[in-house]
Image (cartoon, rainbow, N blue to C red; front, side, top):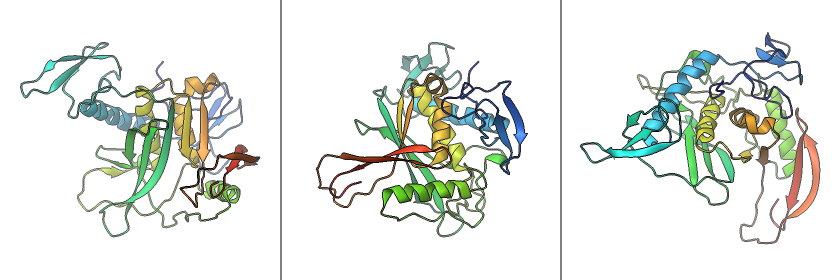
Amino acid sequence: MSTLFTINACKSFGCRNLGQPTSTDYSWPDYRLGYPALHCRACGSYPPLFDEQQFRDWLSVHLSTFATEKGHFCPVCYGTKTICYGHNPQGSQRIQCRNCKKVWTPKQYQKEITPPEIIETVALLVPFQGASGGQKLYVLISFDALRGNILHLSTNYTQHQAGESLHYRYRGNAEPELHESNIVQRVDMREAQFLRRSQFDEIQYGSAALKRNAKGVILRPVITAHGHFRVLNILFPTVKTHVISHECFLRGAIITAWAELFRQQQGEIWFIEEEIADYTDNTPWRFQGKTYHGWWKKSVATLGSGQKS
């Protein structure tokens, strides 16, 4: 069974149920942590529950729209094996899916991307013209960590309809930016922010309201992350190494999208926190120690070199 649309599943590395949509070990809803969760008895985890039907409805349109515009995979069956199939009357390239035989004309046809060995993903907050001043979008940019090529960009604005449970709701309590210069202390402070949330994936980053009568929806960043990494998984299903901004729900979205590799213990996720005072400093990095942090007791290796850490 395809797990492309799976979102309610165990997300614990090393658990036999990782990414599995069904298991006799599952029970839900469970409110032990104060929010509706899926309880996995095999590992004891409590990942937050989502409205799976609303997620499926949105994701299917999201994937089909991306495929129709870019031509990297089929907008019907999401297969990646395609052939060029002549041109339309305007001279644009047509594509045919080798699996389901769907024929379409991509709006922005792009030739095949060289598969990356490592995908790095950073999160940004970007101003936009919304209902009032100070509105921000949550943005994810993924690129080839070795070549530098941008692979995919997403924001939490969607032009598509989305169920209410997927909408971002700002409650007036944005998480403060962290400016601690000590990297290890900043990791601890960030982990503490995760624990103060109503649930781990419920980030409050600031106001994001569209203008009156504007089309579209502002999504919860966690939904954007799941959509973002499903696209990348279709394009690059064998990538084993991910480098990401220090955000727990990015981890959950990656480990769900590439669950088969992680169940086989073939996947790696690295969080990055850095402080660079001198970008001209080319002194080699040196290992300075290892510590463990947060709810998941994540291993943090500290590297330093002159004005960098």
